[in-house]
Image: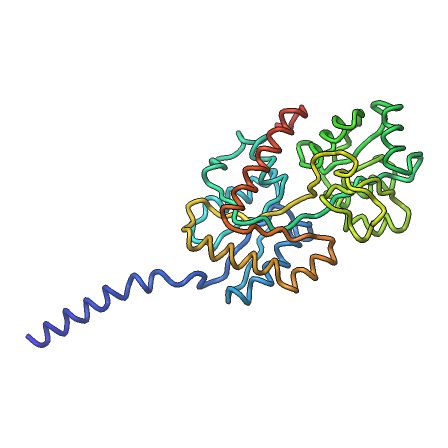
Length: 327
């Protein structure tokens, strides 16, 4: 009888312990963040800086996996289909996670709005409306607008591709400014756009301010305006497009995403860790060297407000700017 009682007590103890063992405190292993661009891209740099600052807080590594292509759809779908346990996340930007879900909705094999949730915005990178110095007379923003109006359909602008966010941004800007520009798409990323300006292949482009700063300082490329809500210390005399009357003052933002079914407590842990990392001295210092601004949300609800506002903005842009998209 005593032996039976001991057996029953042992079984009861094992039964009680098994749920606790199955539900290890999050995180109990490394977290993977999928990047929809290749290594060295602005978005990739942001998550590597933030991930390194998250590691000591979480007690786990943040591993970066690059899955470029298909307007970010490959990376987004892999994240959305992963087990919603907080161990597979995705970083995206205004192009992959705000614009693409609108204009390429039919290409998704998931329901983006239902399957993906934004945890927090991460960063904003100022863009600069830059111009070539090769056989292009304008030296200021006002001269550029006057020149473009006097030469409709002759001024070429570069983008990272048809349907990209800077393609839409530049077309929206041209419509607001009352000028007609010719689109010059390429697939070489931001570096290729800057090269287009250096060679004179393109007259203007919205490029990453940090990556173009060297050639601007060297006088090889001119800066007409900054696309951000503030002037940048490195180019103090260059006005923002907001100052000049263009309503979309934001630069290129990035944000962290998770599967929508992820438990609230796990999302809270990811949110708290990420926003604390963004406010850390190490991240602030690393960001400053890249001209990046940290933009953490105040809460998960605040992040959802950001998400809705950006979706509404890009929906309006895509309705006002008509672009023939690739199949």
